[in-house]
Length: 241
Image 1 (cartoon, rainbow, N blue to C red):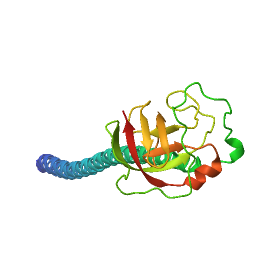
Image 2 (spheres, rainbow, N blue to C red):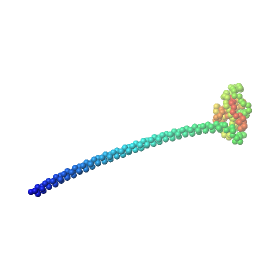
Image 3 (cartoon, helix red, strand yellow):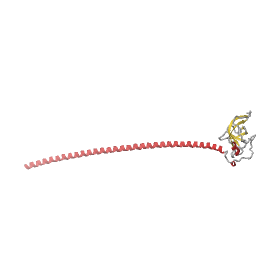
Image 4 (spheres, rainbow, N blue to C red):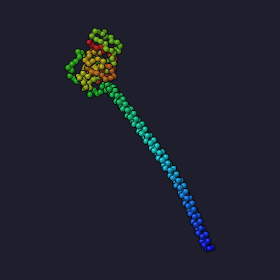
């Protein structure tokens, strides 16, 4: 009887021990699961924070790249505008330089026509087909009057004015009317070609050519020395009707 009771007690104790062990094992598993879940949550949180940080860095880099691209575009536009402005200014400067060079060339040609070597100024010895009724008097040394004309003005003469005059010689080029220069021809822009004029103190002439600049009247002379001697003078000029 005692042995049976001992066996019974021992069996009950073993059951209690198993139950306790199972309870402890379940609690341990629950604790491990809780710890694992907590660790997983913390890891997930850290992962999410890392991803957010990456997104922020990428967004910052995108904004920097966008701003840089816009800055480059703006600089390109400014550079293009500056280049166009510089090109326009250069074009204007070239045009002005060309105009100034042309003006100086005309003035220089007008001045140099009296300074050319006499050997390059061959004068045709043949008589032109058309000549004025009277050959002009060769330029005397005396200086003509620059005041109002002293010769009475007749009905056949119209006073043109006191004109600044110079002299020129033939350089082999034709005059504006197509003829070679000859004695009795003058260049003037104030009257039509073919107009007969009277220069007080020098005689009658016919306007055959045009003048560039430097004076209002250019009188043809036979020789270089005569042209140089004449220089620049103010003369009274009439239009002969």
